[in-house]
Image (cartoon, rainbow, N blue to C red):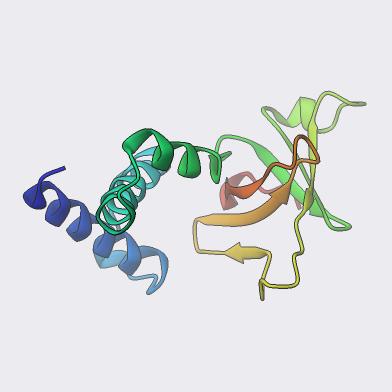
Length: 143
């Protein structure tokens, strides 16, 4: 990645930071979650390449396993678990849904991060040691 591309990525990252952290609607990007996570990955890739000398494939493996977009799923937090499904019918079915445990590692202050539009949850799938951040749309939360 050339420095000019990195600068553009960092500009977009700053817009995203303003939107997510400052919750400023005037700087809200019109990008989908996938575009936002892709932009974050690009910025981090460049930083890690510069600071570690690791190759693109190694860095890609780190980030593809640490973030998952579930913003199209209906979801609910209940008793330390996150239940989610593609449709409300599946969510309310007798087993046609998914359940992950909310990962509560003592080193992290929070495990559920609520924003104005998205919620990020640290999940443990209990499959092959997979633990990652999953993003859910607040509009699809079942209350």
